[in-house]
Length: 407
Ligand code: F6P
Image 1 (cartoon, protein in one colour):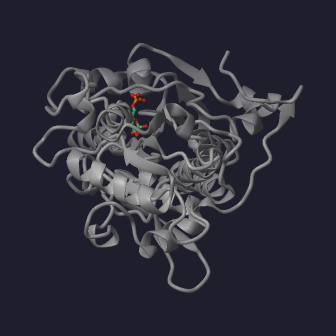
Image 2: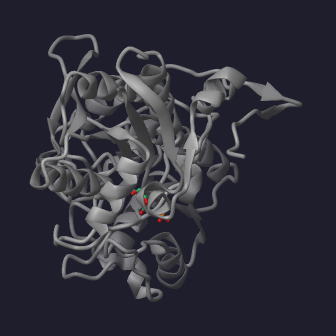
Image 3: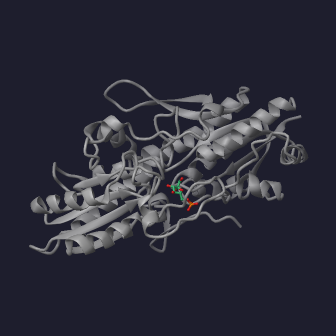
C-alpha cells in the first residue's frame, strides 16, 4: 500500500515559497510508483492539528499548480507555531494519530529555522515511537540566516527587490539641487544583515548611494550615525542610508525599541519595526535637514515583479529534490545548497541533518563589514550578485499579475 504525502508552509512568506510548494507537489504527483495522495496542510502544523487539509491533485489538473509557481505569499497559509520541547507532550501522539488517519508516510515542511525546529522534533518523536514516517525540511527565508547552506530560497528575490528599489529611491531622493537630505530605508532580516547588505548591489560606482549601510552584526551608535551622515553629506548632498530592522545598541536594546514597545511572537522573537522612523526623527532634531524614512516592510518578500530567475529555479528544485531524497529513505534532513568552486556560479543540492540547522542563525561574516560598521565589502557583492540574476515573466491579466488563490 502506497503511503500518502503531506506538505505545509510555515513562518513568514517569501516570493518563492510557493515555487518550492510547486516543486514538492509536482514531483510527488509524478512519482505515482512511490506516493499515494498528495495533501497540503492549510496554515501549517497548527492548521493540520485542526484538521485543515486539502488534496493537491486537482490543482495540477486545473492548471492552478502552474500559477502557484509564481504566486507570492504562502498559498497554503502559514503559522508561527512552536511544538513543545518535551517529546512526551500530548500533542505528539495527537499529531501522529492524524498522520495515521490520512495514511501519511512523507511529511515536507517549507520554512526557516523555526520551521526546521518542527521537522527536527517530529523526526525525533518518530524515532522514539519507531514510526517510519519521513520528515523533510525545505528551506525558505528572505533573512538568509540558515546555517549549513550557501543561501536560502527567497533571499535572492528579496535581495533583487531591495537592490532595485534602493536604486529607484536614490534617483527620487536626488532630484532637488543644492538641498541636503537624508533618506533612510529600513530593511527586514531580524538579527542577520544579509538582506540589508543587498542594498549595496544598488550602487553603480564607488561612492554612489546608498552611502551608508548598517547591519545588525555590529552595534549601532545613534550619535556616531549622525556624525557619519553629516560627513557623508559633505560629498553627496542627498544621501540614502540603509538600516536593518534589527540594528541594536550592542547592550540588548534594538534601536526600534527606543521609539516604542515591540511585541513578541510565539517563538519569542521581537517583532522589529520602526528603526528607520526613530532615525528619521533623530536626523530632524540633530541635523535639521530634509529627512524621510521608508520601511520596505512586507513588499520586499512578496514582489512577483522582482523575482530572481535563479532563486525561482532553485526554490522549485529544492522542493523536488526533497521529495527524491524522501523517496530514497531520507528523514530528519533539510535540503541545502553547496556552492561549487569556479568562475561560473553553480550549486549542488544536498540533504543536511535538520537537528544541526534548526534554531541557529547564520549572520554576515564580520570580516565582510567595514571596520566602522557603516558599509559592506566586495566579498558580499561577489557572494550575492549571482543570486539576483535572471528575470521571470509572471502571467498577467488586464495589466495585473495573475495569481493563484486557495479556494
Ligand atoms: O523571518 C522572515 C521575516 O520576514 C523577518 O525578516 C521579519 O522580521 C519577520 O519575518 C516578520 O514576521 P511576520 O511575518 O510574523 O510579521
